[in-house]
Length: 169
Image (cartoon, rainbow, N blue to C red):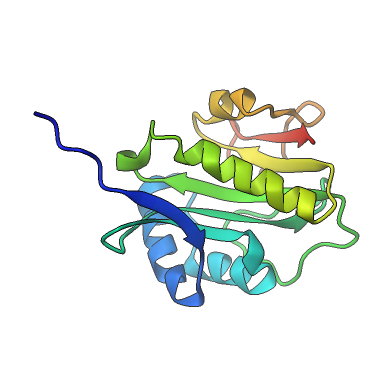
């Protein structure tokens, strides 16, 4: 008999969650490392866009970081934001990471719904993100398409397979 997965839920991130978020990032994003200062800066600048996926045991199993942004100014990998870019013309899904035990349980879709809700609340009509690794198919199923040709400036640090994507609301 297979064990039932532990109950989990999304909740607002708190300042003392940043180290746990960085721990999850270290496991999930091996090829796209970001230091804890990146997550701390996003939280400080726009806490409404920061959430964690937490188990009933209090363990952080995933996170979502998002904030207002600009299509022509995506964040640089592993560089903390000093401020949100102005003027803002989109809502930016900065990072979504889920541990292996969470996959296939609908949590990624819930995170996308939270981003859509926050973008609408902020009056934005589009969401932008940078897709890395093998996540392109997931984002396409969520309604995201390439922004122009999707190619990024290599100086942003995301790698050759990364693509800028957008979803209109």
